Length: 284
Length: 278
Image (tube, rainbow over all chains, first blue to last red; front, side):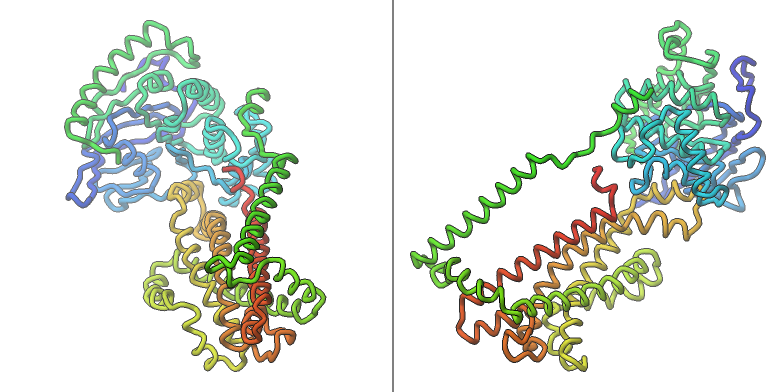
């Protein structure tokens, strides 16, 4: 928590997540599974917090708890001091203040890209369809999405789809973006383009980003901090401050500081990966 | 940026002229080969095919029928029956299927009955339908309805249940109400399955209408030209020993089924324009 001032995001005041002693026990066929145990993590308002850990360690469980898709069995999660879920209310209410961008994408295939982006404000009744589409057009243009408004998601490249989905999430003016390995399926070149695009979007929109990934380079390149999680049950093993100032671009990848951070992370993650492998963890 | 965007867009398949011609050529070759083999087989009195009148004889029987209003009225009769039974099956089957897919209580209550009725072949209902309904027309319509409804319902239920859970989660997290979820996720999500159910269902209705018309005597028609439908047309030709006409009736049904499936496919593409992109 004693971050250098240069690292701490100065612009945002909303979107601080406090994860406090969270437990999650699943009841699977082979018995009770402790997915998350006594997990505490403070995510600052406006920060990009990268969550790194072995497959099946319970990262997504944590994300689902924040999003309100699943309950927790102990502890509490707060958003800007308000309890999302806790002892009296094990499952948070899903809401547009915390929008999820999914691993394999969840754009509605039956809506055009523009209709997808306009979806949130329309169902919330905040804007009329025409107003929402107007705003969507503007936000898509800002993210370099021009000329694909009236295409269906199935008609554009996968990188483009991810960008549309991120813009769709941002249309809701969320306090927090919850990203669950959003670029996993992309090839590494497209991925690098997406990283810069995400940062560009982030610099324009002051949101907190909770970003799950397996990719260490991605984690260090994007994050203000990288939380390395233990293998199941999931809790932070080490929290790394990435003291490379934002705005960043791809040139930092070759900087000595980046390399040394990378080394530090690799060691910590590798230990957990070996443990997970030996325990025969499956992707959950 | 615009160059990048343009290159990211998958090219839309254009209905190319040459491709269309290739299709047409292949279709003609396929039909011609079939007819020639049939003609030869029939003329040489090969086993099985030898008992079937050759295409030339069938054509000779068909040509005069083309100017016979009774023959066309058979088409109209059968089509009308198929259409009304099929529409009734959709009007009842789609809401019922949606209710079963979305409400656990409703599903638990109706599933056992549904599962018992479903395996009963529509034709097994013919005697009961004749007793049950006041007119023959209604009996036939009812049997057609039964032929289509279970397929339509099964597809609606299966389609609704296979909608990706992430779509629901995404919609919820963007603040959708239950009504929004139903209207904006479940309905469009299930539409492709409804189209599939319709395509399969209409085929079954043609199977059923023909058999129902044969069994029930074509809704009271006395001779084929009175318009008992295509099924009764075949039955009547059989009774009157006009074998070429039997084949005429069979081919007519084949053509009718082909046309109705093509119409449904076309309609299906119109209501699910996104499905062309995958």
